[in-house]
Image (cartoon, rainbow, N blue to C red):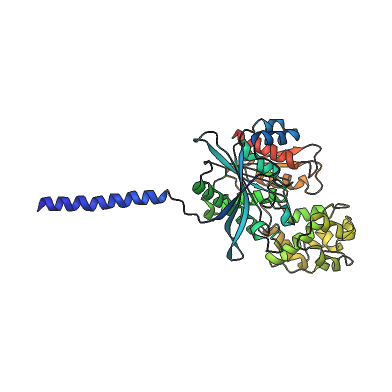
Length: 412
C-alpha cells in the first residue's frame, strides 16, 4: 500500500514537472500580436552593401559617421496592427537590419521618425532610399536595427485621408506599435539579435513625434513594456500655441501649407469646429478647401497660396495674441486642440538631446529652447542637452542631426 502511494505521488509530481516544462517552452515561443506580415526589399540600382553605404555617407562629408559603417544590411516592409479611431488597422513601416558578422552579436534598435510627407510616394516603405529615409535606412550598417514608421495615412494605410497630421495620440500609436511589431519580427524571423537598448530619433514633424513617443513610454503605465535608452529630437514643434504666436509675428513664412494641413487634420481628428474665416484673410477663405488634396506635394500646396506674407494670409484677429487670440472664445477650441497635441515637459527617466539649426526659419530654435527650459525647471537638466548648429537652416540641419544622433547613440 505504501509502495503504491509512493508511485502515485511520483506520477503526480512528474505531471507537474512536465506541465512546468511545457509552460517554459511556450514562453519562448513568440506569438505575434502586432506583426501582421512582411516583405523583403530586393536591392535594384542601389546596393545594401557596407562598402557602398560607406561611400554614400562619405560623399556627405560625414567622416566620423562613415567610420562606423561596417555591416551589409537587409531591408523589409513590415505591416502591423495599431489602434485608430476605436478600431484596429494595418499600418506599415520600414525595417533595416545589419547582417551579423558573428552569430552572437546583438544590436540596439532605433526608431526613426521622419519629417512631414504629403504623398504616398514619399513614404519610407514606398521608397526606402528616398530623400526622407535613405540615410536613416543606411544607419543599420553601423550595427543598429533601424525602424521607420510610415505614419497612419501612408504606406499600408494610405486610404486614410486626410492623414492624422500632428495628431499626437495616433502618431504615438503608430510609433510604439511598430516598435513592438519589429521586436516580434526579430524574435520570429531571427535576421539578427536585439540587445536591451532602444533609441528614438526624428526630425521636424519626426522631432516632435519622437518627444511625444518618449513621453507616452515614460508616463503611461500600459507602455511599461518599452524602455528607452536615449532620444534625439531634431527641430520639432513641441508647443503649437507658441509656434503660432511666433509665426504670426514674422513678416513672411515659407511654409503656408502648414497651418492649412494642420487645421484640416484637427477638424477631422480633434473635433475642432472653427470657420476658415477666423484664421485666413477673406480673399483666401475660398481657396482653403482646395489646398489640401490627396497626392499634393508640399510645394504644390504652398504654390496655391501665391504669397508668403503673414499679413496677407491670415485674419487680423488670428494674428493678435494678447488682444484677441488668447482671450476670444471663438478661438478656444483651436487653443485647446493645439494644447492637446503639444508635448509638455515631464520628469525624464532617460536622456534626451534637442537639435536644431540656428538659421531655421521654418521651425524656430525657440521651440527647442522653450521645452528645454521647461525640463530644466522640473529639475532634470542633467538629462537633457541642446545642440544648436551654426549656419544651418531647417533643411541643412537634417543630415547633421541624424549623423550626430547615431554617433551619440553608438557611444552609449
